[in-house]
Structure formats: structure tokens, C-alpha cells
Length: 196
Ligand code: ATP
Image (tube, rainbow, N blue to C red; front, side, top):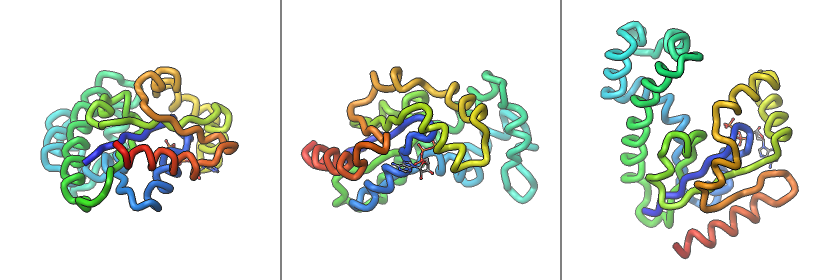
């Protein structure tokens, strides 16, 4: 199965673009959503979290103690790196399992991840797409979508690679600047992927 990674900065519109690919029947794995789900379903991951951060990482009913985990990793790079070292391999496992069950006649599949390049998971995809958008447009999209301030969006952006850094690792690009048609750009890429 041909695996195409797709990423972009916060508010670039990668999820929106993936929804267009889905209308073409392309299966999409949303890594960030899965990363949240597996915190309470993957036994290897859960054991790793408890061993690393303590039993209080989970409530008695099995739910994740989000506030506790956030208080440990927030602004603590070493602790965040430990959490990522547990979560990223678990997402890779989930992706491999997911690929096994998608219809065999799918021409390719997409893996959408905010930190595709930062996590190194782009190396496990055959090709990678970067979705770009102007800085101010990204900020206004996110402040309109989420209950967050401009400063909070900028702080989240600072933790991601810049588009310039990411563009060196990408094979394909989609400009989601609300000037170029995203449907046309998706169709163009789709045609190219069918030939790979
Ligand atoms: P995040 O990394 O925060 O999850 P994202 O890159 O997945 O963001 P989306 O959630 O797809 O971005 O888009 C952010 C917001 O901008 C959404 O509310 C979406 O509806 C809107 N948006 C994205 N692209 C467009 C577009 N071309 N035209 C109008 N609105 C758009």
C-alpha cells in the first residue's frame, strides 16, 4: 500500500484537505486523533505511561488523568520527550494495524499528522505533502475555530518546524491560501499518486 504523509502548520488546513481526499475514497489515518484514543486503549503505551509518570496518570475507571500529565510535561522538554517516546511508537503500531484493514483496492492511503516531520514519521511514508498557508491567515483560522488567543496560537506555532524547514522534507505541496482552488490541487495530486 502506497503511504502518503500529509502535514502542515497549525491552521494550515490539513484536515480540511484530507476531507477532500476522503471524498475521492482515499482512506485517511488521523494520527493526532488516534494518539489521544490509544492513551486509554493500547496496553503497552498505558503501562509505559504508568511506569514513567506514576499510577496517578490514570483514574481508577481507566480514564487518562489529562491534567496530571499536562502538569508534568507542560514547559518541561525532557518530560515531554519521554511522553513522545512512548506515544510515537504506539501511533506507528496503530497505523500499521490500520493499514492492514483498509480495502486492498485502495490506490493509496494518507497519514495526517501535525508533527509528521518533527516526529520522524515522515520517513515511514513513501511520499509527503506539506500544506501551506499565509501566517496571518493561519492565526485567524485558529482563533476563529478554537477559543484561543493570537498569542496562544503563536506559542503553539513556535513549537513546530517552520514551513521553510518542512518544505525541505516534503515531496508535494498544497497552497491553502484561499486563492488557489484546493479541490483542483487535490485532484492534480490524486492523478499523480495513481501513477506512482
Ligand atoms: P490544526 O493543526 O490546528 O488541527 P489544520 O491544519 O488541521 O489545523 P483545519 O482544521 O483543516 O486546519 O483548518 C483550520 C480552520 O480553517 C477550520 O475551521 C477550517 O474550516 C478553516 N479552513 C481551512 N481551509 C480553509 C479554506 N480553504 N477556506 C475556508 N476555511 C478554511
